[in-house]
Amino acid sequence: QVQLVESGGGVVQSGGSLRLSCSGSGFTFDSYAISWYRQAPGKERELVGVINHNGRQTNYADSVKGRFTLSRDDRSSTVFLQMNNLKPEDTAVYYCGRSWRIDTSIEDWGQGTQVTVSG
Image (cartoon, rainbow, N blue to C red; front, side):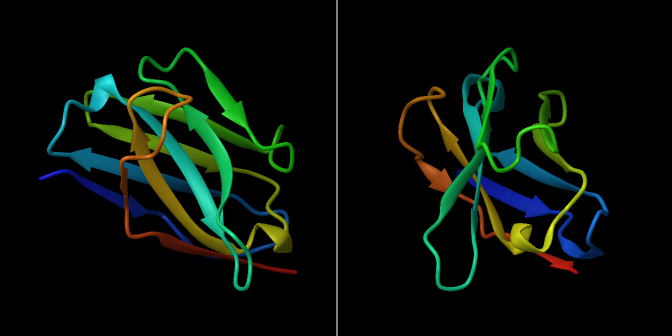
């Protein structure tokens, strides 16, 4: 069955960096776009960024542009979210999801990984 597993979350000080990983299985990984969303307590889930199926297009939320970078390694069926210059407002549970294309609906979600930025 389709499975997405996030890893790499943790506690980091403001200005620090983390790299999140989203590993996929049970589907043809390089045929799908992968998105990262985040949800802070009491807030709605929001898009952080998305990378298309061939890695040639990425879109980011304005709040993370210039700080976060998406990349993918289809040999290992993994998408990476490099997060630099982290801020306390980046604290949230981060989820990855797959979609057929960059502008289509999310079909499956991972279980999430907690990122906490202390200020």
